[in-house]
Image (cartoon, rainbow, N blue to C red; front, top):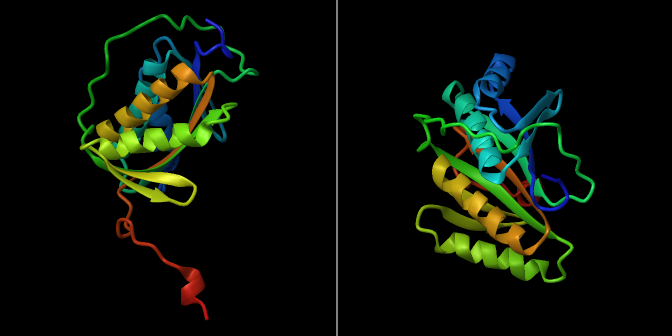
Length: 202
């Protein structure tokens, strides 16, 4: 398998539990998640993952859900990438497989700020708009347009499934595709409340 040719998917995840024992929560989730068929490297900024698309998405989802199960408010910053011409694969058997890990909290409600980047395609805006339209048509996720991203609200399973489906569909047509997503669970803020500081500050 070669990176840069659309065969290996990469991801970066940074976890931010809003609690004092954040080290335990972050490292515990990464250590416990199934790494079969994946290259997984953690540093002081986050964790890098390489492998087949379904296993990469499953790992990121599992890490987030494991951390969320031991946290009140938690945020995850995630980037998924495929087809990067400068990517280099780690020396791992990406074809190794293991049974899917069953988690009990897959239906927790989460919010997600989602941005799609079909790189190198002159019709990128039509591609992005098409995927947003597909998301809106989904009965499982609430979709709202924001500046510079699209907001998704739904269960963890529904949101992750939507992102993986969009990523898979776009990357079949566009060699270098990136998704950036910020996930939030348990925020104490009122959902979708907006504060316009330009109007509040006189």
